[in-house]
Length: 489
Ligand SMILES: Nc1nc2c(ncn2[C@@H]2O[C@H](COP(=O)(O)OP(=O)(O)OP(=O)(O)O)[C@@H](O)[C@H]2O)c(=O)[nH]1
Ligand SMILES: [Mg+2]
Image 1 (cartoon, helix red, strand yellow):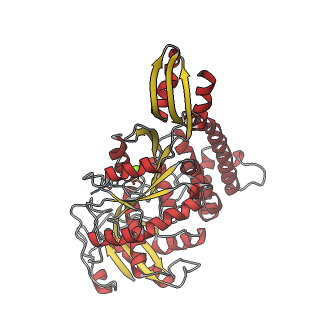
Image 2 (spheres, helix red, strand yellow):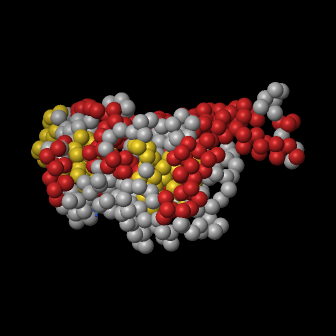
């Protein structure tokens, strides 16, 4: 097994779990990683002093817990089935960053080489017991596993380790729940959480029934159940009802969003969408390009509700630019569904800026993960893509050169120093559709509104004033051309 440790007062010396180039986990100032080889040193571990009152007993997992995991001191566990050791490490480091984003302290991480996960305990019973020792010695109260767990695997691991076990998907759902701001975003995340929970209810049934037993005394149990209905069926039914309500609510919010979108389209504004892996620097780039004040945070999924801003090319053509939710490796399918609406925005864009953190240890893996998700969104492949290699100020020049040759059309930028921003603006201006219908009309003076639309959305070739109005020769899109011709002469 490989192991990493986030050591504070503890004496486990292990491998650095933070991003090697320091992008993700640099926040912890007194964090001093130390390399200690591949093998977990059992003697060293057994010589650890156990920190008193830190470990907690396994607690009941109730049906509301999916909302707030209250993670604190966690041990990360991953298995490495294929690919290189480095890939496996990158994935576990990312899990560490996710865990910190969710508000927990990562005490240690272990990685095990296996052909496939063990059906019963994910790790195999021997390794599960080793993890139990590690949990006990570090005083962790939660284990986070770097994949999806079946209800059985999860229950068995909890039995062996005596602490709460959650998986990567649950963790990501929790982060989304913490960050979603809009009513729609919140409803979508809750729906995704319930979808994930529903088939897994069996694994949690025991504790839920116990809880129901406790409620009987309070006058809430037996009488409230239907004939022959078990607690778990009742819970399932309640969850389904809640899901149905959420789906209705989301469907009701849809028209408002569509109106906003079609308003934008009616005004003929071309749109640029910013996509990319979480923490790639999308919001920072947006701020640079538009001087907008978009939340930038060194945390994963800082942006969960899309933000749309208006901007202009050098030659005065207006366009919208929207920031989107960050992508992540193996994004839970429930979330792909939940955020389809956000991603649909991508498919409707005229140009896609795909922001890639050039200072990350595995930018190519991130690009591939983004492309995997985009392939699931109808129409997204048709949107022209500009790869934007970001954080140029942090990136290693050699890595940057390798990325440039891998993605020949890429623009290298730094939102921090401003490097490459002008070039990117030019590329955006070139990439946006130009109005293509030539009109030559005289517009009456009382239709100044039309003239100003030609100024913002079209390209003026000639503008003069005559007795009858403004004489215009311009390039505009079809809709505006039709309106101009219906009004003008
Ligand atoms: N040095 C440096 N840091 C950057 C640059 N761009 C972004 N960052 C940092 O990278 C972190 C993530 O930036 P964001 O712009 O929030 O990234 P994002 O892609 O919007 O992230 P999510 O919304 O969480 O998916 C922040 O700490 C930024 O300050 C850059 O060009 N140079
Ligand atoms: Mg963001």
